[in-house]
Length: 174
Ligand code: FES
Ligand code: FES
Image 1 (cartoon, helix red, strand yellow):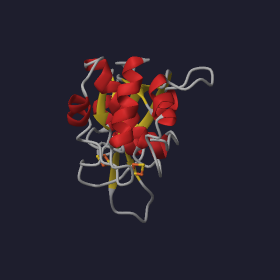
Image 2: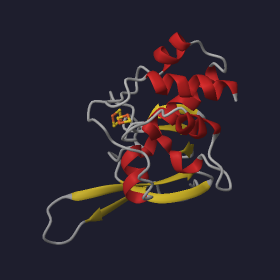
Image 3: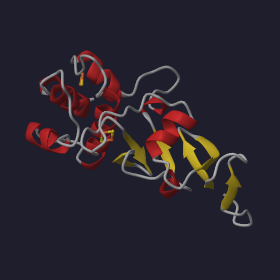
């Protein structure tokens, strides 16, 4: 966002409505594209991605910040996008699951999940993949126990985790 632009835009939402909604302009680079949008101050980053950018690969699996289905990378760190306001990401760089493949070739972590059957229904998978990449960025050669500990903020109701851990260990060897 340019500094000479007003950050807040106060608009009445129609004559019959009695409330005033405040919008904030944010500029966030998402999967390599700069996105400038008006958001409400309360807008969560996950809703910004899903509802305003139609990047629905980032899932919502809870309302308690406990499932990890919404994990994305913000400025290179894996974060749960339901715990961050879009306004807090202003000026930042976001990568979602949609931004991982390059020229139609899957990221090595996506490949490892596919080859090791690290998913069943797939609902947790985008968050698992983003969290797993974050884990390997911090610890490129983890033990099985370190993978299990590193992914404890991501829940899966299908796989029993065994093949997810196997996938991450396989990706570490790629
Ligand atoms: S939606 Fe469950 S942790 Fe974000
Ligand atoms: S694969 Fe179904 S929730 Fe993880």
